[in-house]
Length: 380
Image (cartoon, rainbow, N blue to C red; front, side):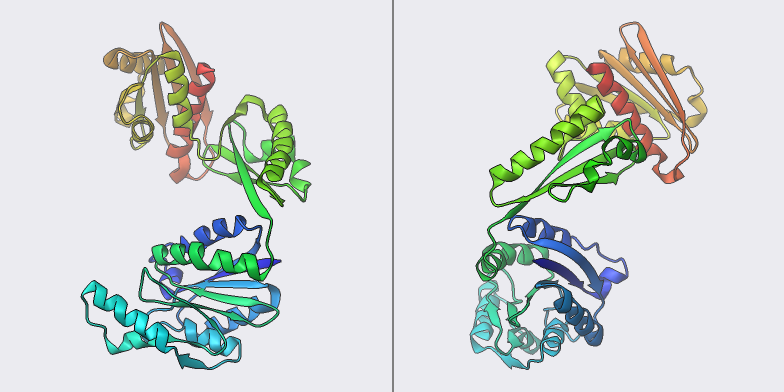
């Protein structure tokens, strides 16, 4: 059983807004074990919307659209779905009454064009929208279903939870769940991680995939099962093997960040850190501040110009530790091609240097992640 998502709106193709709806819908489909194989975006053109919906219905049992249900001329999703499923549009008087009441509650006058939102294809299932003015609908062709959702994120999210997910469970007798766990790896590149666990990436259930970031790699383990407990067991078996091979390069799971892990380690040891950087755009200070807003273990940070950063790295790390009276001082200097890290603690210093060969814009983020990982390993 396959699903796909179609995000509708020219603003998406122009890069004016980012499509977050598809990601939210995808996460909700996982909870009912529905495989998502395709996502796409299409502009406000009725023929192109019609074509992409037709193609979706040919290859997927469930097609979800988001966007294009507003009252304006360029909102064409209703017309496109009607054409794609060989249906006519009709005015749903009940939906019209709900829209009128919604405007009345908001204390606003409903304009004539809002009446368009009460139209839906014949033989479709109406979905009332108590949190907005764009009702939704479901067209069941017998073989497949196309579900039309608003583009406003909070409306889409509400209707997914309250109407769409329950409908899909019942319509397709969905009893499975899809669950994922992400192992976060630092200090190894994507290709090296692949060398260690490449055989796991060939598994069919659970599946294992890699996602590279600037300075760390995510290992995603995804299992499909009838029950949560069964999925957890499947994931745990693969995770055990991955941990045996990747060791302490795994710094956390799921939403863990290097800075949050470092703060946690500092808290366990009742220790503190201060940072100094050059060429990092204040990233270390910003990320530590977000992870420790009360500054119980991160005491502060400062930046120095690149022209001053030729100073001995150990001196920089020591000076910031003394200035903020912390256990650790962490210094990170980055240029487009050169990254230097120094860590000072009670008279001892560690220096680390590497040539950076990636995209220059990613150098600061990559350098900060490398520095944070060095501190993490020292704390361990």
